[in-house]
Image 1 (cartoon, rainbow, N blue to C red):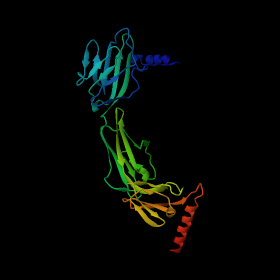
Image 2 (image 1 turned 180 degrees about the vertical axis):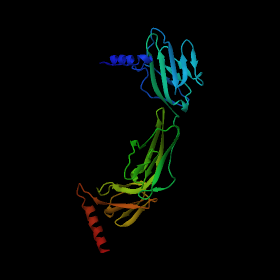
Image 3 (image 1 turned 45 degrees about the vertical axis):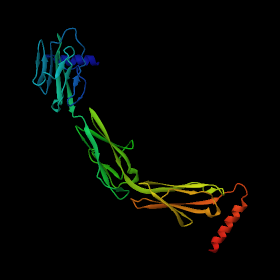
Length: 323
């Protein structure tokens, strides 16, 4: 038995009541609308050859409009509705929260059984004033904890968190309140440093807000970039780098003796025998008060005979041995 036959059978069963509900005349819904906005309940009907005898809309069993040869409009709807008499579609304007609920459409065609449909309307206050609130505190990696709260006005259906453009997930350090309103980070890690976004939304509106979270960490991953071997007489530049927030302060030692402070770059204008040895860079974070060091052993390279340089080097090393 196809759908048409099923609808016909349903209509026959309801013939005594004078109503046929087998044919869907309204979408499944629900319809969504914004406060002060407009919604249109569009039916699935096309204009008939003969005008409908009656078209009636009701809300919670109270009349909105009943249209026959004249229109009977319910209290409070006179300036808020427009009825398409040919299809039964209804436009409702200046929505308020109290408009949320179930709407019923009843149509009596000329010479046919009565048709009825129902649909639900949900009215939402648009999202506004979104912001992320976090305690004002200096955060230090592995020592501090914090939280971020996503606050907004309006009807909030969902809150979605992302960090640096990627979804934020729960972990051994990160957890969420039941409604995703607050993110808890206990304790903070260098990976928690960055920009957090909260998207607060409902079916009729959305708003995204950002917050930069500063986690002081490091120095980590300290290294020296530059050659480990260079030709005698050449200019050599060593660069010390480290992952650190705030940026680290750098100091240098050559063969155990301090040579430079507060500079990440060490420049040897001309490589001599006295310049060969161990260069130590120390990075220190003045907030976390942590420091880390690394060593580069710089040696001479000779692609052609450089006996004079080697002689000077041997002499320098010999002199050090007697000191």
